[in-house]
Every structure is written in structure tokens, then in C-alpha cells.
Length: 126
Image 1 (tube, rainbow, N blue to C red):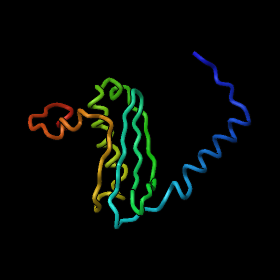
Image 2: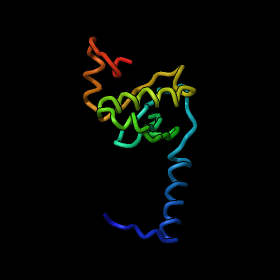
Image 3: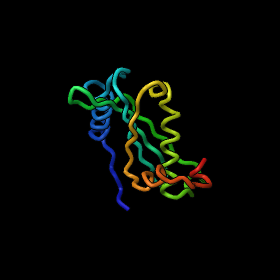
Image 4: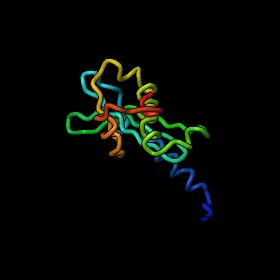
């Protein structure tokens, strides 16, 4: 339980960081000749996704997305939240990825098991 004292200096630093994360060379327009990489992660209260591309020995951010979980979704297990993140992110970025190759990156090793399992039931199957 620590208190953060937000100052004008903090506000200016936040504005600078936000600008640098959302302009070139970090942000880029999509190159539909290149595959997309969807980096996803789920947390206790939210989901996050970053759509990127890697070519010319550089990594380019195309878009960021995040959302909070509903009260019901917060009751999901970790694997279910990670799977939900992939479903949500692919729908969210559909306009970019529907005609392109895509690689999904997640830190959830259990999703690899899920991908190779044929007898999945319940929410994970849906």
C-alpha cells in the first residue's frame, strides 16, 4: 500500500512516453506483404494485445489493444483467460489479419497443449 504522488513532472513524462510509443519508428503502418505477429497476454482484470510485424531486421508495432474483464470473465482460470485473449484479439484486429499470415505469441505454455488436444470440452472448446 504505497501512495503515488502525481506531479506535473509525472504528467509530462507520461505524455512523452505515450508520444514515443505511438509514433514512428515504434508505430508503423501495416505492410500486407509481411506476416503479422499477435502478442497476447491475460491478467487478473484485463486482456492486452499488440499487433506487430518483423522485417528488415526491425520490429514494428501496428496497433495496441486492451480491455478489462467482466465480473464473470474474472472467474475464468488462467488458461481460459489466455484463450479468451486470443479470440478477442483476433476479432479486434480482424481487418488487418483476415487475409494475412499470422503468428500468435503467448506466454501460456498450456495453450500449446490445448492446440494439440483433440478432446477439449466446455468453454475452452467454444
